[in-house]
Amino acid sequence: MKAPSMRGAPLSLFNSMGRQLGPFTPLSPGKVGLYSCGPTVYNYAHLGNLRAYVFTDTLRRVLRFKGYDVTHVMNITDVGHLTSDADEGEDKMEKAASAQKKSVWDIARHFTDAFLADMDALNILPPHQQPKATDHIDGMIAFNQRLTDNGHTYELADGLYFDTHTVPDYGKLAMLDVDGMQAGARVAVTEGKRHPTDFCLWRKSPTDSTRLMEWDSPWGVGAPGWHLECSQMSIEYLGAPFDIHTGGIDHRQVHHVNEIAQNMGYLGDGAPGAGTWMHNEFLVVGADKMSKSAGGFLRLLTLTEKGFHPLVYRYFCLQASYRKPLEFNWDAIAAAHNGLKRLYLRIEELLAQHGGAEISAKGDWQPRCDGPLKPRIEALDGAVSDDLNTPKVMANLNQLLADNSLSTDDALYLVALHDRVLGLNLLTTTAADLQPQRTSGPLSAEQVAVLIAERLTARKDKDFARSDAIRDELNAAGVVIKDGPEGTTWEWQVG
Ligand code: AMP
Ligand code: ZN
Image (cartoon, rainbow, N blue to C red; front, side, top):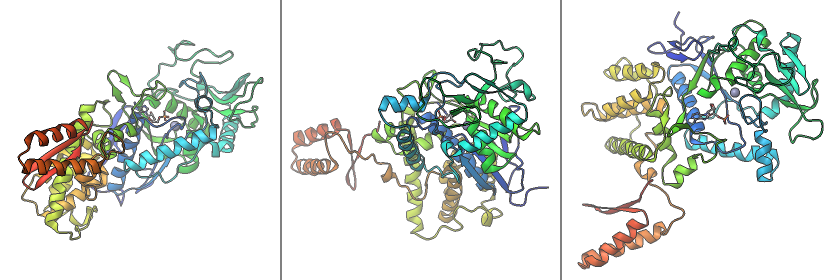
């Protein structure tokens, strides 16, 4: 039976479990529980991380568009992971704290705030719950206790370990050849570890020193292993099983594989916790993925300092399928800036024609889906239902904006509907908002205005040498001047 609140075409999503595109069916009709792996707050989010959250936000918007009532949970990892996926290396939080001579708590607070500001700037809907790992240590200890009671753990000198041979199909998500794996092939051999894929659930603090973040537990003073928090918090906030779990493609290999093993051990029903596992591909720079630990990464601030509006980055991400690697380069960002500006300008024209009247049934497709707009609404629905095909949604939007047979009201109604999925603030942000704002540079906006007025006077006086010299001075300061029939306009050059 079709769920009562589901709209339009069946929603098809790519499930990394089994690697197939298939119809999505929620566990409870009309409701979706969505869990996303959140940031580790030992550094700023780079543009690659933000691609992961634009993807999750798009998924949430599409689910809402399809009529589902979504509960979105995203954790904040404020307890140290080790610098490698495989439980080795230094603790990321502690490393950042000692490098910056701050407490781990200050580091976590600072980078959490910076992350939330980036999310807001990108118009990413705030998750309904954003639990922090450090607020859930008791829950994680209880989780480990149950894993131990269920016979999935063993203790070594340095911590409590999960025995990956106690659950069926370990590594199915990553398509791991567990039997063919040699100890040390993927992870360094830890003394006493039963299998190379076994992983740490609780890391004991070294006996000769104290860690900056550590807690008492039945396995000694220490800190949780890095996969534990997502199993514990997803089940605490969404119950088990829940519908969809998201993360970047790197999580398909280790983190989510181990989460699934933990969930199976904890729930004891052979189920992986979530029904659908979805992963976004990487943002890449040249041949490499953008990464935090490698250093030299680009932030949203890097873009805005160059004069690009944050929504240009959202637009840039939406131009590609979330399942394809996306290559970052400045030409592509400049092209996204121009594309978004054209979109805003066209919509501003429509809004001007509309004269400020209310747009009928703004953003809700129900009242109009049987009328003459049906094919356009079906095209939008078809695109989003095809595994969040945002490039197609953008193409559909551009087509309808070029269709002069649509009434202004109908066109604006469709724009609002497309924007429910795209989240580009199409009816409220203007091309002028995309104008880069400069806070530093050789000239202030006031100085630019004075020079432009001076240039105008020079031109009137036919002093072309002076007007050209001013133009050169402005160009050198990154100001682009446009002389049009209605006078001279200017903007900061982007990029
Ligand atoms: P982290 O803060 O390192 O835990 O990562 C936060 C999210 O960003 C995770 O879902 C990662 O899988 C994802 N991620 C990391 N690097 C990239 C990248 N270059 N492109 C897209 N997603 C990424
Ligand atoms: Zn996670």
